[in-house]
Amino acid sequence: MQIAIGKMRINLAGGSGPMGKVHRPMFEAAEFEVIVSGRNPDPTNGVWSFEEGAENSDITIVTVPIRATEEIIKRVGPYCTGALMDFTGIKGFPMRTMNSVARADTEFGGLHPMYGEVPSIKGENVIYCPSVRSRELCEKVIGAFRNAGANITQMNSRQHDQLMHAVQNERIRAMQMQVAKLRETRLNIGDLYQISPPPTRMLIDLVARQIHPKNDNLYEDMLQFNPNSIAHKPGSYIRFAQATREFFGNEFLKRAQARATELMKQHKQLCYP
Image (cartoon, rainbow, N blue to C red; front, side, top):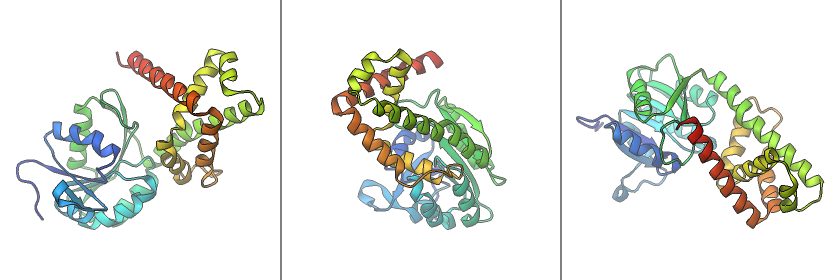
């Protein structure tokens, strides 16, 4: 194993994706050496295989789509000798999988950054689910988040999944019900928007933000894999998002998403001036 000398090395498994790009600068600012591993190793571009990245690092963080998380944890777990963590939006099954495949002397713990592609982590929320084996290496990762200005909330995996069901999945269900009622009016979305009171306009704009195509698989997985989403039918979120985009139309959708982005910026400024 070629552990880095001088600097502690973090392997971002799946780090070529959005979350890897957001967090690589944060870890480098905390004086870690960061490497990236993935399904398609490319030494010329610095991409290791999952197994090689895990074997040659002090800490491996799995940052892949929810539906691929268990597979990748099983691939890297036997090669991790320091710490194994993940960035998944569900915490129950990743924690169980890490516990089952990680070596007995390997630390493991779960993380859920509550944001996507953001310019700064300052003021953002991160949920940390430690295990009985979370020790010094996991704390170094948490320290990097704190140094970047993130807010860390600690809880167990069951509490996390219950919370995500309450604050994310139920929010989506409420949006689905609202859109269904709007469609029942058989009015044009632009006309509906104009005659709606400000709270409803804000909700419509937030729905437009929610149904951005790049989020389809993420939210479908959040609903499908959360053990509290017992009523979810696989694929139903994607069907809802596609139908709502058609209902809104491209021009209204773009304007509403722009308003939602500005609304979120204003809210963040109020919370973190």
